[in-house]
Amino acid sequence: MNFNKKSFILFLIFMWSVYVAWAIDVQSTIKIYPESTTRYDLWLLPYLILFTAYAIYLLIRKQDTDNR
Image (cartoon, rainbow, N blue to C red; front, side):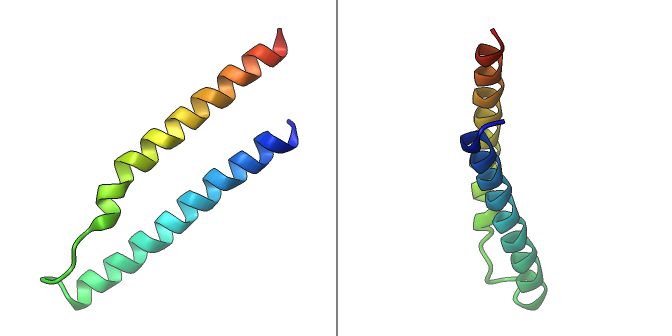
């Protein structure tokens, strides 16, 4: 695995880690202020999933072309 693939995978892991930390923070905020919290983290989740799926697709496709 070359450096670009490793750094891209680490970037994806970092993005998901930040998202999980943000979601946990929002969950704790909802317990304190249940009526005044907008769940922007849930709005972002589908885009994050799509980006991750596309990135995995590109990594797999790139790996297949490298093996030929």
